Amino acid sequence: MVLNNKCKKCNRICHVLHFQQSFKNWTSGNDDIDKFIQDIQLSAHNNLEEALEWIPYNKLYDIKHTSKDEFGEVYRANWVDGNIDYYGSWDNESQNWERNNPNMFVNLKILITPNNLTLEFANKIKIEYKFYGITQDPETKNYMMVLNNKCKKCNNCICYAIRFQQNFENWTSGNDNIDKFIQDTQLSAHDNAEMALEWIPYDRLYNIKYISKDEFGKIYRANWIDGYIKYWDNENQNWERNIFYIFVNLRSLISPNSLTLEFANKIKIEYEFYGMTQDPETKNYMMVLNNK
Ligand SMILES: [Zn+2]
Ligand SMILES: [Zn+2]
Ligand SMILES: [Zn+2]
Image 1 (spheres, rainbow, N blue to C red):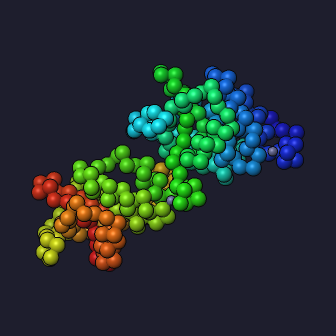
Image 2 (cartoon, rainbow, N blue to C red; image 1 turned 90 degrees about the vertical axis):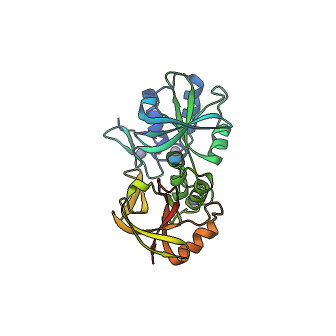
């Protein structure tokens, strides 16, 4: 369908008309939620990112429980379509939105009061989160908000710090101090992946050979299968890395319990500091690094 009518507010065929035209193609099964989503779509004249969508549950996959917060249980998922971002556009042929973030990471949080939904409520959520839409778990019948953390320091974007944060659930060093240390470096890596350290499982290292000893202890040489992070690859929803099988040095960590950002920055003056690993036999934690 080609639209002939213009938006009275914008005096052109704006996004709002495309949303309006699609109202008949979806329902949440709850009139209040339908009205809530529609109202917000009808207000998105200038910025597509302001709109919310009804997101069918079967468009979400790899759904896992992660934590609990003031709203209740929190889940993580990937969203097949991804959101309609600022650069999205209406495709007349498919009668759908062109999207740029397929398979994007999202969080799901239970909607406590599905019958008290207002623009004010949406705006309140949007202060803290990227708010994409609402879905419903077909088993529990719970309505859930589909959203993402955003970085206030980076103009409310999903910066590298947020990308790292989305992955906190998926690794641990086995030592709370070291986890916190690595997480802190990752949360400081807003636009520069080199600021971040990683937990590097020992089995991602091979050809490990003793080479020498200095005031820090023994130094080993190894190859690191994955290589270090260059930048976030939106298409693959993963980090783009550099130099697979890169040579690295492993050095004992003298004081695994006094780890700070300052310590990391001090090491980084002398070395390319990639992350931490643990020898499963000796249980020694080691820094994975390279001479500059
Ligand atoms: Zn308009
Ligand atoms: Zn258009
Ligand atoms: Zn940031």
